[in-house]
Length: 418
Ligand code: NAI
Image (cartoon, rainbow, N blue to C red):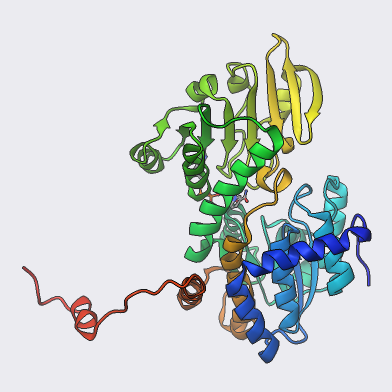
C-alpha cells in the first residue's frame, strides 16, 4: 500500500485519539452500523481531501465500513494530525498522503496521488481537489459520479465552476446543510478558534479588545465565544444586514480602519482576500495578535507585513513576531492559515459528528441518484438534514413535540383568520 505520513511510530497515540473522538460521534456511529450491514458503497473508490483529524478518521472508517476504498489527503498544509495519519495507515489500512507542515509542492503532489486512484466519488474541503482534478485530469473527471464539498469557500468556488459550465459532475454542498453550517461553522469554529489563540499565546482574553472580521456563521461563533471569555468584541462587516445583526447582538461594529487601532486580538473569518492589510498594520497597537480562521491564508496580507518589517522571528510555536520600522511588534499566528486547525485540534467531535454524517449519507445519495443529477451544485436533501438533527437530538436524550392532526390541517389552510 502506498502512503506518505510523517512517522508510523505515532500510530498508537493516533488510534487512541480516534477512539476518543468516536465516543462523541453517535450519529456517525449509527450510520456506520447500517453501512456495515448494508455495504452501500461496495466497490466504490473515494478520494478525500479533508483536514486529517480524529473526526475525519472516523468518517473514513465509516466509509470503509460501507464497502468503499478510501484515499485521503490533507486540505491544508498545516492541519494534519500526524498521529492520526499514521494510525489510519497502520491500523485501518487507509492510504494517507499528508504531513503537517508540508510545503505547497508536497501538498499538491499528495492531491495528485489521490486523484490518480480514479475515484468514483470525491470529497473536498475548499475545492482544491476538485479544481485540480478538472484542470489536470479532464478525462478522469468525466468518470466521477459526484462529489461533496465541506466548506463555504469551496461551495463558492464550485458554484463559480457550475456557472461557467465547466463542472463535470454533480456536487452536494454539505456545508449548506443546516446540520452542518449552523453548528460546525458557528459552535465548532467559535470554540476551536478561541482554543487555538489561547494555546498559541497563553494570553488573557478577558478585558481585551477582540476584533472579528466577518459576521457570517463562523464569525458569529467566534464573537459569541470571545464575549463569553470577557472580551470587548468588535465586528467588522461589508454586508449591512450582518452588520446590523452584530450590532443588535450587542457587539461594537465599525470599519477595520477604526478597529485596527483598538484591537488586541484579530480573527478574520470572511472567506475574502486582504481583509487586514498594510493600512491596518500601520495603525495597530504594539503587540497586536492577528490570526485567520477563514479557509485560505489570503485574508491577512502577509506579504505587506513582510515588506513593512525589519525583523521576524518565531517567538513561540505558531507565533511569528514581526518588528516594524517604528519598533512596534505584530504577532501573526499559524502563518495566517486556519488557526483553529494549525494551533489547536479543529472542531470538537460532537459537531463534526453532524458534518460527517452529512458527508456519509451524501455519498450514498450520490451513488443512488447520480444519473438523475445535473452537473451542478445541490443542497443536501432536506430529509437527510432532518434525519441527522433527529438522530443528534435522540443521542442527547432530547425529545420534542410533533404536530397534532388539527395543527397539520391549520397550517395547510387559509380560511381561518382573526
Ligand atoms: P459566511 O458567508 O457565512 O460569512 C462570511 C462573512 O464575511 C459574510 O457575512 C460577509 O459579508 C463577510 N465579509 C466578506 N468580506 C468581508 C470584508 N472584507 N470585511 C468584513 N467582512 C467581510 O461564511 P462562513 O461560513 O462564516 O465561512 C467563513 C470562512 O471560514 C470561509 O472561508 C469558510 O470556508 C471558512 N470556514 C472555516 C472553518 C474553520 O474550521 N476554521 C469552518 C467552516 C468554515
